[in-house]
Amino acid sequence: MNDTITALIIDDELSARQVIRELIKQYSQRIEIIAEANNAETGLSAILKHQPQIVFLDIQMPGQSGFDLLKELPEINFKLIIITAHEKYAIRAIKASALDYLLKPINIPEFQKTIYKIEKTLKAENDIRHQILLQNIKAAQLQKVIVPTEQGWHVVSVSDIISCQADSVYTHIFIRNQNPILSSKPLKVYENLLPKHAFIRVHKSHIIHLQYVKKYIKGKSGQVEMTDGSIIAIARQRKNDFLRLLNSFTFQS
Image (cartoon, rainbow, N blue to C red):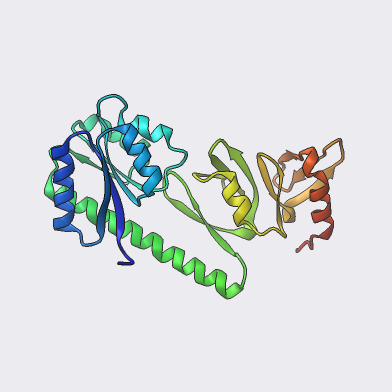
């Protein structure tokens, strides 16, 4: 089925995994359990291997906790459902950007609400992705991108992106007339995604939009001043490519 939602259960208790599996069978026709794990180490491997859309994650497990597992992930590109026997973990679950959390023993009405939230959220995301795809196809060029964050996602016009700055496995997206967005994707994703005629990676940590270059400052490698006031260094090995593209770029009012 095209609308199947793939899910992974990580819980050290076999009985807890069985309960979740049976409840999903009973209350959702779309969610499919594609793997299970009984500790953080095997859970991390399963996430990286299967790339599930949903992860049901127990917090208290022998050895590493569920929160320890999350810290080891290069990015969180799935919807997270925290499972815990202690309500005190609810706040930490929210801070971990969980879509929802379930208290043990699992309450059936609460579980049904979680299932509804999962299906509704993913449907909304798929709908907006479809709309943006159609808009980009009609325009015959990339006009908008979806920027995932730990809290959800933002729809951003490509023409409004001033620059992108790497921050470990995250990326700060600087946007005209808006606050920056911290994307959960690394800079390499945006280097591959953004149009090559307008965006250039001038440094290992920066991609800039030539439309927003205010000034080029000469030097051994050089710097650029952007229209938002930021000063960005140009790596020496990228200087010639930058100047070549800048000279060929058609600026728009």
